[in-house]
Amino acid sequence: MTALTSAQLVALSAKEIKLHEDLSKFGTPGAAVNAVEAAVSLTIGAIGTVGDTFRIGNKTFTVVTNATANENGEVNAGTDKATFQTAVKAAINGTDGYNVAHTQVVCGTLAGDVYPITAKVAGTAAHSITVAETFNSASNLFSHDHLENGVDGTIGVAGQTMADATYLYVCSADNTAADKNWRRVALGSAY
Image 1: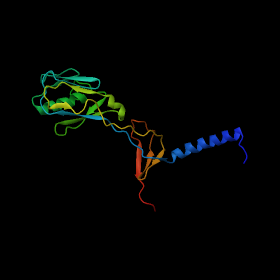
Image 2: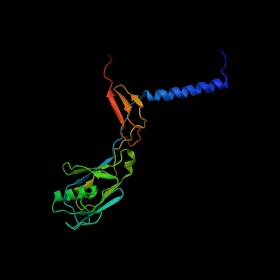
Image 3: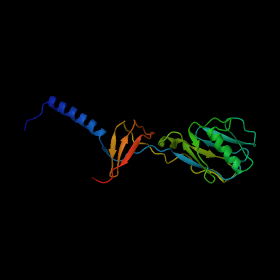
Image 4: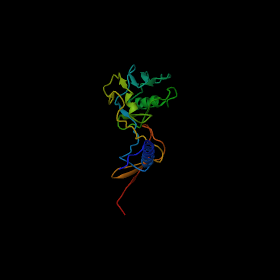
């Protein structure tokens, strides 16, 4: 057996690196995951009380006498539960004419008495967004003290593929931990 020279070893190493780069575009084992937004639930089961507060991340909201809210961060107490629920969502999303839309989250569609509060940027970084409340009614509360259940996306480059036993995944554009650029196709059965 003949020993390889240093120059031959360098040439082989360069070929191995190039081969690894080429193979990474044609199928890395494992499943690719698109990012998922972290969220928390806000239950509004009763009319607001003047002086109640709730904080989501970098913004605090204060409940004021109905029909007097006119400053960023103020929420009308409402005349009943339904009008308070509407006022809370409008305040968070900045659609009431005086609140600026929250920079970190959006308030989704009411289901029963529960609003989903969802991070604007997907991934686990939003788990650092904390929430708190001083509602007078025990029927008004957050489900947790911070947003949770976010998922980081699989980092990839456009054209990269991955595969598992069920799917072939293709990265349609460069993907960060906060992106959703992976597409999948069922492998089906052999033909």
